[in-house]
Length: 131
Image (cartoon, rainbow, N blue to C red; front, side, top):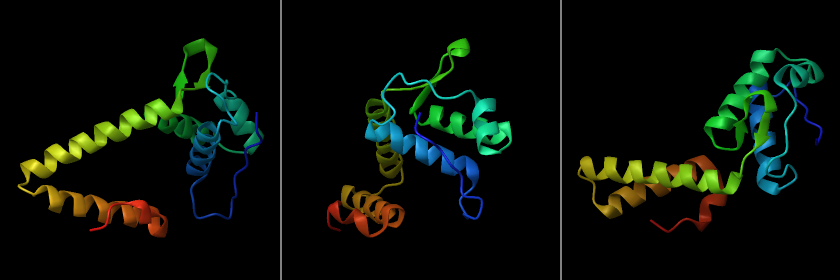
């Protein structure tokens, strides 16, 4: 596996550093679909962290659809692109229903979504439709 590390001086919590790095590696293909991740305790020991910290990162990755837990067979990289798209589509559908329920027009709902995307992504959100 690609070497993982945690920066103890970072303001980003260690579990989030682990979650982000594994997600990046899965998305880039450096960790291919089906690749088995180290056991929670093994990775925790390697990084000098509590097992609960690594377990939280793995749980969040599973919630995001990046990994799958297969019982005794461990935690493996899922088909990340498909899962990410499914989760994003479900979130977008939930948002659309909620905006409709609140009485927003399509334009208002889209403007609100674009504003939120720009806040989350920063300047790189320039590919979003113009308000």
